[in-house]
Length: 118
Image 1 (tube, rainbow, N blue to C red):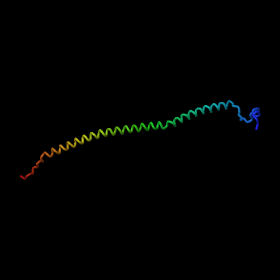
Image 2: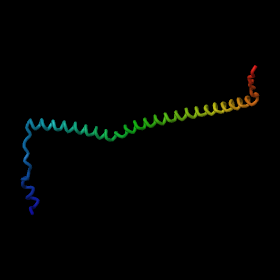
Image 3: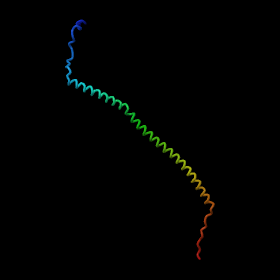
Image 4: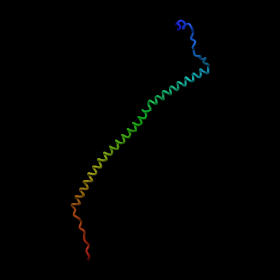
């Protein structure tokens, strides 16, 4: 095992072989950085769309369901009013029928004349 003094005295020998960056590699690196930033922005937008996709769908379904409930409520309201009027007319018609039957019972039957031979 080497002492601490031996390790500090020598320069490190295990270094990566890095080539110097030329103008082409610098330009490529700048393009890659710009594309990476754009892709990151697109990724954020996609995540945001994924987070709110069901909210929009639920909004449309809720509006549709609310419209159906409104239409059904209006139809039931109109039907109840119409049913009340039909019952009132029915009671009036029954009274009219009863009055006609009473009138017919008071009128004596018409006598038919039997034709005679001359």
